[in-house]
Image 1 (cartoon, rainbow, N blue to C red):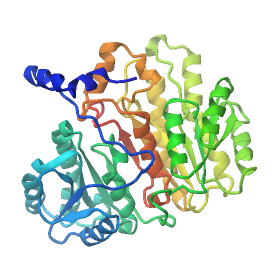
Image 2: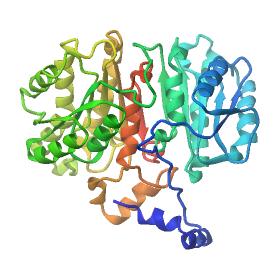
Image 3: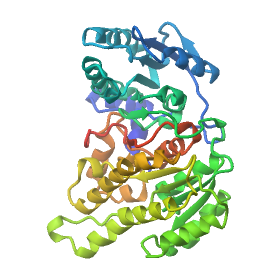
Image 4: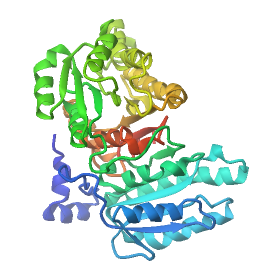
Length: 445
């Protein structure tokens, strides 16, 4: 569904009108060119604190990606990147202030701010750990300042040996694929597998399962993964079998009509995948439903049906595949949660429970997966323009769109791009992360 407010706000007459009455005028976001994805554009102004640990390697791989690294601010500087890892006490935080105080005004529309630091819990020095934790509050605040430009700010925290896998998250955050990921933290650790892959087709030759693939966000995920070279195995309920088959045929994928809550569904899915190859690169658990009702009026069926689809099936499918070695040494598991699982929502106790449970799945399996060369991560979408949000009452829908730093809803492609990065080999150092794809929604911020 199109956002008419956004369209009017960016017309010549609308700009004058909205400015005159003080209405917000969100900027259309720059997204990936579908025929030429992952291309980095613009200049990066790179700064660093005294004793910064990662600036030299960042300069090297950004330059190799064809991005111009600047030593001074230009008018409409594309991106600002600051290595704050060397800030060890409160007094030295002035270096962070000085860099952004001097250069933030020059940040271009749809620009990026990226701050790099140490994961606080990886540090022995208490003072150093405290100021590194302070980077989160800084980034979230900057994100709210620059959202009016359609620009984003994110934080990358480096755990032990995470510098070996730092290129992937930096390149993704600089790309147009991160357009609706704002005020988030990516923690990068020692990679669990090889990070080498072609940036233009990182998933070439890899098989990936996507549940709920017939429409909406699941369809966008499938199309994006296919764009990046993957062979997609799309799963959806039998009632959507025709739509699923058409969608998968269009991207050269395979379709399997399956009710994932059936008792034998995990084994059927596993056997179907095994019949097409001994290895599976990734599972994207996108399937989900809503059955909204005030808790006091909610039936047991509304609770059980939703929880089994949104959470129980995810756990059973994970177990079925983890009982084999199909995902070992480079495999990926992705959970799709929701900001309702973080902030809660009226009339969504069942949905909030199930989506918080997905966050729990990611956290609980992270160490087990890493030991087998597998990563597990998740995304928590906010207001995304889908058939489901189109059915929301007009006023509520407008509030959902405007109550974010970017002043608009996201698109299914925004969720798909983050998942596309998480399942890429370049993300082998990202494990146990849950990021919101919400434009920095005020809900649960």
